[in-house]
Length: 422
Image (cartoon, rainbow, N blue to C red; front, side, top):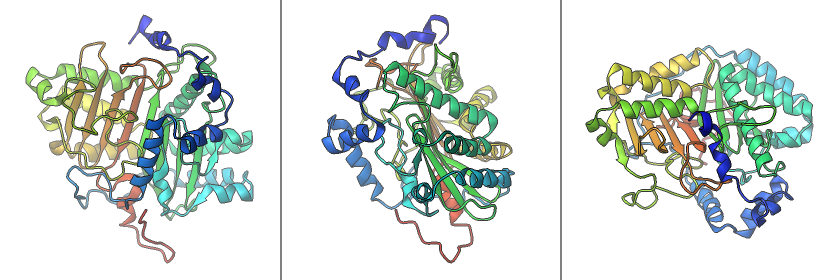
């Protein structure tokens, strides 16, 4: 979208005089979330909450294409991350917290609480510390951990998502629930240059699960979204995210032959009558691998990437590189090389139209990565149909790659390690 389309979302600004927004404007994040959990309204959100709780009861296995975990897909390796600096920065940030805050913040490295991240604005799993409730010094300390961990461009993308979230809070006049720092930080294990540890950073439209072992890093699962995906006024005017994935995905689909397009397009409509029950839902819409879907079976669909010509495979790499943007170098290059080595069993699939102005969904899926891109209908904005200015993206590492679980099985156990069954 360009020109007049940049602020196309403004025709869908909500009526802030309705009870949803007048009530939201008077609540903090905790009261707001409890209203969903305790009041049961709106019903679909309450049902989603109950469904997520049930999914969490199932022991972790990992996402697969057929229900069976493929072994030996991941290995321990030196990925060159600056683990000394990351640990030093983390310990410095923790020194600004009180003993009570540290106790709330910290979980065992194998805690099932890893799996309780979520991307809606309602705080259904309140763990760790919420940044907008901390002192500036403590909050900046946590942000410094994120800055040292991510690539510079990945950090900019994360901060942009946070700023867009704050912009949305301004649009709906509910800054206590939606703001630049309405995110939770949770520590798993002890920061170490030699042992496994990690953290979760999650909130509305930004969720990062990051696992470290020595100089190796896993950032998966992660979720990044925006509604709208651009700031068109105020001090951060011009901030925009997710446009690279949008453009490259559409360019790829339009470049396919008619026969390839037919095979790639698994459903013609974004909410297609041909979809089986459960293929679309109110929260995830077309996403298969969102919050709490850690064990989902996601069959391969679409066309093989190995069938594509070099220019089309280059577009696949453009998309994948953008999805790997959070990883620092050289970890990103190593991960991309690992993914491309599986192109003979990597699939590209599409839902929706592929005209210049169409909204759409696409997925790239292999034994070692799943990336999803989806245009959504309005949640805060009022567009009933999916639109190009509300975008959800996510990345998973199937076959137990998420949360570094496959790597954990390769790490020599310590005496205090227990098996994660959550």
